[in-house]
Image (tube, rainbow, N blue to C red; front, side):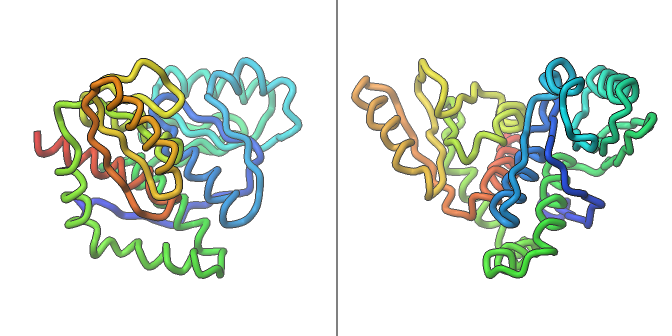
Length: 247
């Protein structure tokens, strides 16, 4: 599966407004976090229908970035942006034709959302000269990823639900789809027997949840992804695909 990871250079601009449809949180928040952490640029990210119903008619931005796969969502987006004369770049894993000022970029390969996210990160890293950027670019040969990801997949108890830390939240939809378990996040409530998955930077707050659950005699399995926060949701999604393949 690691051989299917093929990040490419994408024609990305600078967008102040980013919208995502169902299942496309991973690329949307990868773009937002990369821009903030690597370039210091603030990006507003909203669900697609929040943009369509609440943002479009009032937004100053005339160039937006959209990630959408659902055909109904895509059609609504194209019609809405066209009627308002708003230019946009729409990235999708499906078959879509552009309309008006909406330029469509289609990615049809396997692991589309993952490869799209990696491509976004690669494109952003290429313009940065920081030590962190150089290190992340080096990671994209994925030479050590297979063994590490398979080991982490084994650490996740398939009988338990999942609670994701704030850093890992962009992976929620795809993880839930791949492993077939209820996936919650730090901000949810009513937790049950769960894998508590977190990164090094948000370990403390997630271990508080683990502690509270154990006090209530709830079964907990902690899983640490000690990787760069920009890559962590992408890596977790890859791990979830491995779990899916091994079912």
